[in-house]
Length: 234
Ligand code: SAM
Image (tube, rainbow, N blue to C red; front, top):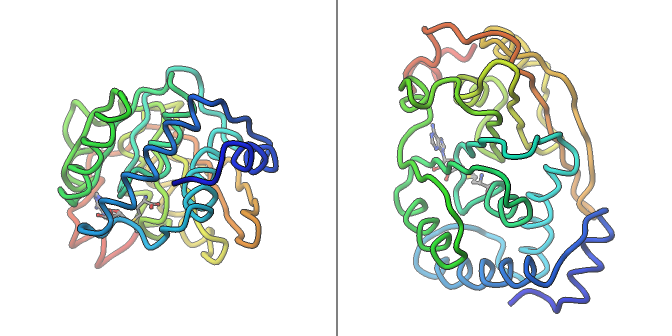
């Protein structure tokens, strides 16, 4: 399904990454299962081998190049969809302790089958982020929360920052067009601080990672319920 090993190696090298045969084999199984499953369940609009390689897999793995994710981090991927960015990241960085969360059960079901095929150990949560981060077993226990293409900065901060322990980080993967400053107020109110904005290119596409450090606890009034979050963004 993926382009051949040599071509994939040169794409990885182009982005400053290395690719082993074992990782290639796992990514290839992932690509094949994604495209097959996508015939019945809507998971992705990108289905060509080169697109999956660069726009899904390499983009996801670049998170560990541009952001500092400590060894053995407990990481939650909020609104993970078909597993991006965290499943390619886990394939690349097996030390990560992975939790996958999505509000759509059909996507969680896909991920369970995928992780089974790949021998990936992960925790799966079907539900809305704003409900689960209120529960003591998920609140402020993660070293890292991350999200790609889920919502604007203000809304996303309310979904993701409550999961992170003080000293941990929220890594938001975005396109370049959003005005990040409009989310600064939300970030601060939730106990975060924008530490770094990393701009990079995926061939012709511009991408951005916003790295937010959790500097103080999130007050118990956040997150609010989804209607309030949407109606009155912070
Ligand atoms: N992160 C993946 C990616 O980059 O391909 C999926 C992005 S998709 C556009 C957004 C995903 O976020 C969907 O799978 C949706 O079900 C999920 N989602 C949106 N709001 C959510 C919430 N409040 N809690 C949990 N999942 C949510």
